[in-house]
Image (cartoon, rainbow, N blue to C red; front, side, top):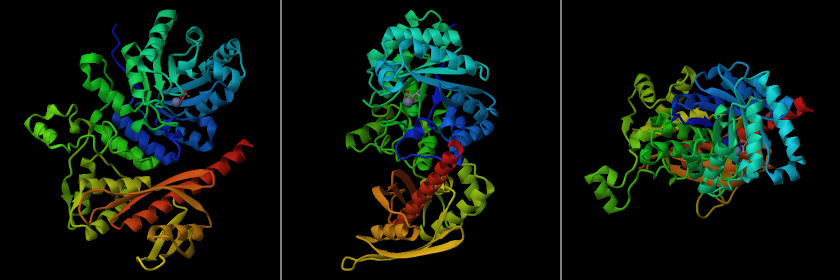
Length: 515
Ligand code: KIV
Ligand code: ZN
């Protein structure tokens, strides 16, 4: 029987979270998982339970509440890792364990110090152990694309025989090129006698910018599962981007024929925004499919062509990925009903408490800004969703600045009902505020990135600030919006401080439970 279905395995919550600077709380992971379910992904890799109690909890929460997709947990080829995955996934309706073990010569020699036979034995015993707890078992020979082909085929045949139901071929370091990677799939299909007993999956990293091309080449040659992330998040240069793979398959039916996914592409833009907001990792404007510029046409010739016939310069309709034009929606007099109805139309379903908070912010915004657009509403809601448990809360701040004085700021924050205040100078008003926050909380943050952008146009536009701050070895990201860019910057800084505080706490918990 012809199998045209390409399984979309989303690893935003696991490999995506390994993006430098990105870190998600269990609640944030759950919010993203709900949206991934709406998007229609088949498998959600929710985390790596053995790595920390935080990840174990997050995988458990996703497993308990997200029912349509298969929920997967990553594990090394050890009993403890498999036990933790089974524990985290016990409430899942459908669950999978994903076991990985490196197979390439360089990993065997330097990382694992194991011979080929020892690798085979470890893989088989892990799968046999996992079979006691799981019926759905995925195995990844890590660094597969740099593994000798004959050994890779031997590993694949052996793990399928032991009980693996999916064999995933990772291009762990993003080294492969499309023709070569497609040949690996062809080789395995030819040489592995039991290959039809398992799904062939691929997992490509983007170190050479080829993750999506390699994934699509593999699918053309028989792979039927693709591992990918929203916005291409992931280790180093990231993983293959889900939105690019899905829209590639959909747009080029002339090449990919009847291959299809379950993805509801109209949900792509919203999913991308949510992941960006919660992970704190901005999407580059020229990012394919969901970047802000993906559908804007600057050149006059292009604009003229689009007006005459859209597909002269547009291969994807913006609405197909959920891109909506700027729309004036609400104003100062709009009530909470109109507000919540509009949010529902935009696809945001908030809990009562979140809705009340968001409505309060909307009213405050409407006092300052005459026209409120869908983008403003999205920024308000996403701010609410991005709120981490607040160890520090901003009460107020003041800043005096000018071109002839040394800027001076003062802030008042609360920490568990105690008020902390400080005053400090800085090179500019924002720098003065950041230094003052550091002084108040007794930490020294190093600002490594700072951006402010307008959510919509106009002098009264909402400004969105994002900061990346290094506290010792930890990098924390913070984001916030306000019509006042200094306030947005201060709130973004406090948001980063809270993320850092939360992580520090979970590390302490982890050290306690693993000592
Ligand atoms: O890149 C990789 O090899 C991985 C494995 C755990 C599948 O992420
Ligand atoms: Zn990976």
